Length: 313
Image 1 (cartoon, rainbow, N blue to C red):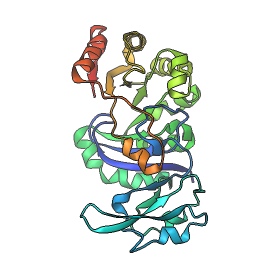
Image 2: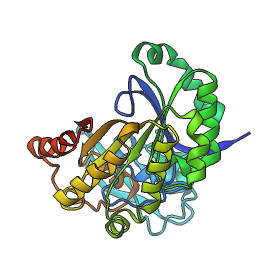
Image 3: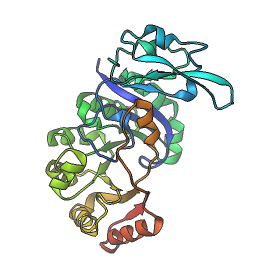
């Protein structure tokens, strides 16, 4: 049996491909994008997350403090919760935490939890099957996302195959940074690639995402030539990849594979993932404001003037 590491299964998604979809989020990514809004997707192993809103307090519980073998979880200062009731929350010293996850196992309210879930293909198929009627009525299906799902290729392929065998449409949300032969092998089981383009200059790409872009562009071209369909996703990040030169270079690249593109999706930067960094005890690296609607519309017109189908968001 094939197993994979995921961090979430999200139902009734309407942003990751056509129609109503179920998103399966695989854990781990080879890229280190400075604007990443899903820090729980970055690591291939476990993460200890803490949600204060779920915590019932050390004065009532305190199991996390008792079981930590390193003394990394201690009692914080007295405060009040959202209802105004007195409460004392635990404090986690991430430098002392060994990720043994004993605190998460002991937490009755799941205020502390491991972001990693080890699952089989069948574990994923059960919730997917529940919403078949929504896929049928809306033209939706399953989106395999991440992280970078192709980093767990064997599991990703097996899940895509299982979905296709049961008649579900499959979209694959990918950075494009995986072996070309893997993309060509999974192509028969994927109806739509949600394919990221982040920067057209390879050196700049490496600085911003941790990897160069030659392989990414090669994979886009080879998949297009092999009959793949694309929803290109282009995140617009202020002062990092939103220069006119990069916008036009991205449009020119898309023109070369226009025959394979259903839509170019321009995604304005947002800060909705900032609280996730706090949850994981990680530093949020972005200090920028989301681009306004007028700016985004100007960028959309650049693609539209080239004859490319483009939309914002």
